[in-house]
Amino acid sequence: MKLDNSIEKIFETLNKMNGKSSDIVTRIIEKNNKKIGYVYLESVSSDDKISNFLNKAIVNMDRKKPFDSFYNLIQNSIFNSKVKSCETYEDMYYHLASGFTAIVIDGCNKAIVVETRQKLDRGVTESTSETITRGPKDSFTENHNMNLGLIRKRIKDPNLWYEEVKIGRRTKSKVTVAYIKDIVPNYKVKKILNELKKIDIDAVIDTGYIRELLEKDQKSVFPKVISTERPDFACTSLLNGKIVILVENSPFVIILPAVLTDFFHSPEDNYQKPFNVSFSRILRAICFFLALLTPGIYIALMTFNHEIIPDQLLISLAIQREGVPFPTAIEVLLFVLTFEVLREADIHSPSFSGSAMNVVGALILGDAAVAAGIVSPIVIIIIAATSISELVFYDVDIIDAIREWRLLFILAATFMGLIGFVAMFIIFIAKLSSLECLGTPYLTPFSPLNIRSLKDSIIRFSRKDLKNRPEYLTNNLKRMDDNYEKNNS
Image 1 (cartoon, rainbow, N blue to C red):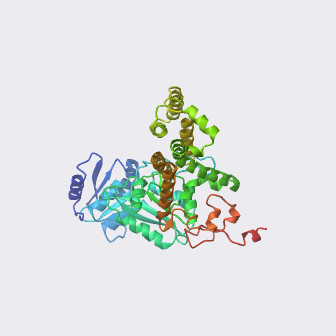
Image 2 (image 1 turned 90 degrees about the vertical axis):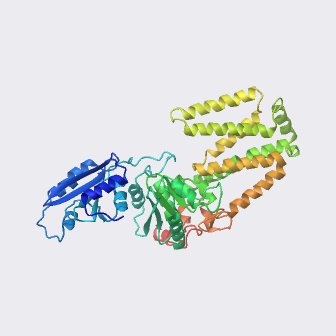
Image 3 (image 1 turned 90 degrees about the horizontal axis):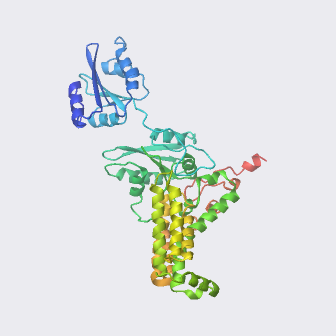
């Protein structure tokens, strides 16, 4: 709806739109026989900025300056780097809610909006969700411009492009797609932007909304994007040929496309020796399969396939299970559920008491359950090893995916033994093979096999050997000049 040319009418309409909210402030000043009004929301605007800059600029305005209209005079008398104009009530209210102050002139149906935003964000702090032992200590915050700056200060390349889309009928949240133009194929950027523009939703509060809506085509519990609050990791991904999506008021960004091996990596792999990184990644891969498969294998062997277990070990396990009233499957499911409850309690408990309480709870429950003959000691060991193996992953989405598939393996082993377990494993591999993100298969670089990209998958080669970016991400492969060593020898 177009703005009226009367200050009183504009203020009246804004008050109606806003339900006469208590945080809307209006004022009218007379200057050179003209009425000038301004309006702002004191909940998101700074009174000091308005008093010190806006009021003074209007009061000290010199009418003798040669401007063709009073509107242009005011616009050029305001000392502010962010001065815009708007002609509709919807546009004006969007700027008001973003911390701008709107200046209106009697008889003019255009308004001037000036940034007077109040600082409502926390400063740059260390990441709380991703432990940092080596590397930069800063992390993304809820301030959108600050997040863009944290990336820009690391990559001082004009080919780093930001494309902005506003999503949410009510929130009108800024969603920025960041990419390096000469590295990322253009069709991938267009596809992401088209998907974002199609989103029609009331609100986007966090990157989780965008992640869920972008993954709608292929239903899977395995994440196809990476979520992080570390700017250094986001920049490394951009330089490799990935796309980063930032959402206003969210300290997390999402990186895509993601493949399974990305979740065996850590942001700190870039700051350690290749041998140590390779060892850590192999350990994470082993932990992935331990967390996923161990309970199912135990149930299959103990319930259906005793002949596979060595006699001495079978006798030992049978002695441990003596007096346990439940079948092996119920025994395992009971303690899997117990550990999941403890995990949820640990996540939602206050930091000063959560971990200690849950460690004590696990010890007491395990010891009491064995003493009471409810479960055997080997089940406690297996479930504890399974739960500990999950902890090597920092991404919550991959941990949740492991939990859900582990339950499927347990159910398959419970009803069909090793045959059911193997059948479920085939289904598991087939499902992973069917997934893709932006045309990148989820099991890349192993399927389809890409020899060059294997250098930085599970085993990490030295940086001088990583001269090329991953082929499945970009056609601009050169990361390092082939003559680098010759020039520096």
